[in-house]
Length: 113
Figure 1 (cartoon, helix red, strand yellow):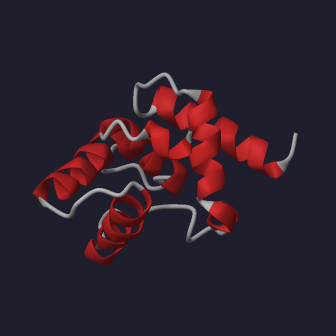
Figure 2 (tube, rainbow, N blue to C red):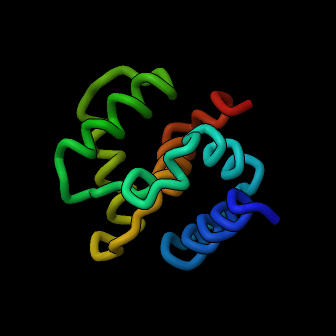
């Protein structure tokens, strides 16, 4: 198994144990690949949910550009819900896990079809 496979297994574990979700491994793999090289960078691989600028980046670069959603209060609400689900006190909120949960929340799995 390569490093990416190890990371996907770690993300699946977070989804099961920290978020109480059973991951769709095919979708999780596609979302992880979609994150590109960021998953290998310690800083870029996580979402700093306490920084408003970071949450704006998630909204603009992922929800609007990648998933094709229109900007609105429901995007901020969804991000807040995902952060709550992951656990506000959880120090490492992996970007791929956050993106996976947002993709599921908006029913946008077809983007990765």
